[in-house]
Figure 1: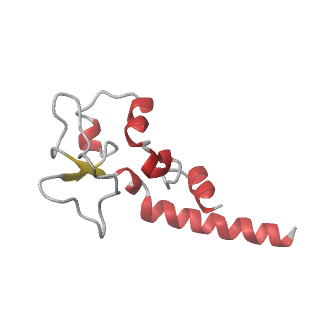
Figure 2: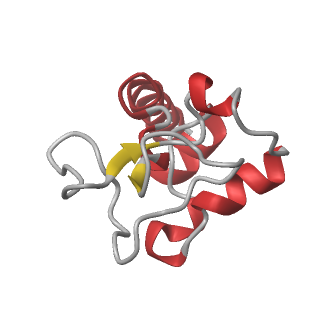
Length: 109
């Protein structure tokens, strides 16, 4: 029991650290335009990596996320449509993320 409690505490600490550092980062992808056009923000063809940090999108593409507040205000998407855009096979269907504590714990486990 002591080992389980120690494991749970260490996972919780690393999950909170992951929330602080990587919250929302897994949704940034290379886009064709800097902002949505006519309510649609098309992904760059052939670019499936997560952008930002060390990986920058090649010219003329823009790194962006549908979860950014300035972009979300321009779009009228439901939460289901919002997650469907980022749930591609190459990004593990959006399962591996640090957007909330439960998904962070699942990612660490």
